[in-house]
Structure formats: C-alpha cells, structure tokens
Length: 102
Image (cartoon, one colour):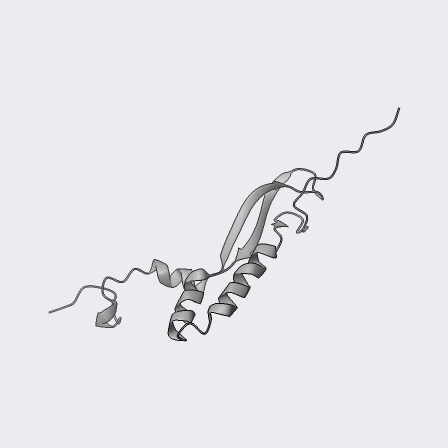
C-alpha cells in the first residue's frame, strides 16, 4: 500500500506543513513605506528581521542556553535602520523643511 505524502520523505513527516521549514531557511524582510530624505518622495524601505522561529528551535535544542543570543539579536534588529529600496539610503525621516527668508 502506498502512503500519502511527499515521495521519499520519512513517514514521521507525513502531513507536516512545509511553510515552517521555509520560515527557518529564508530571511524575514520587513518593509514600510516612508519618506526618503535622499529621493524626496515616499518609497518602500526594507530591513532584515530576526528569525524568531529559528532562534526558538536552537534555544530549545540547547536547553535555553541560546536565550541571551536570541535576546541580543532581537535588540540589535530593533536598532537596525530601514533602507530605501530605490537609492539604498539609510535615512527614514523626512528632511526638515527650509524656508527662504524674504
């Protein structure tokens, strides 16, 4: 009798969703539309986020010894700036408006 599932996959993986595996392998990219100070217009800004699923699995298999590394990665990710997708500038705030005198 033929078993259902992916051909060549072990029996314990039957019915296992492939999406969580993809979350572990590929980086998480966060994006937002912001005013670019270099382009002078609203553009898409991106930054690479922390892979929490991967860190959770490593933490679980190392008996929670990975927890400080995970916390450090999460804190550093918050400090990482968004980059403009068009010009790759780092600024995310609009330029201050300068008014001409007179």
